Amino acid sequence: FAAFGSPAFDFPTKNEEKPFEVTPMHNSDFLQGTYMIEKPGTYVLQEDVVFEPVTPGHLPLPNCTKYSKQKGYWLGFFAAIAIAANDVVIDLNGHSIGMSK
Image (cartoon, rainbow, N blue to C red; front, side, top):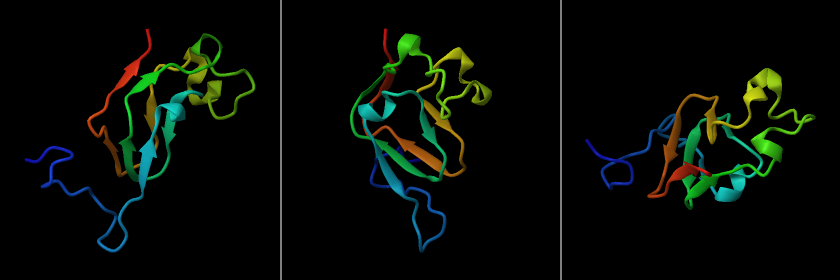
């Protein structure tokens, strides 16, 4: 068994010819709300993330289509990341994701 980030671990790929895309994630990617993952790939934290959307009351704006009530955001932002795809790897890269106080 090898842990993420160890030299013995190979990230999964769709096939041997085309590896998954690697997407860096920064604290700024979480400022408007939940980070939505909608396609396969490896997502790598570049820094510690403190999840505190800069929206009134940590709620989506009323006219927001990305975070609509129909998509379950009527409770506000309670998850930093939402995954809506198969074959996703989240590499914390030695960092953490935490909720603001």
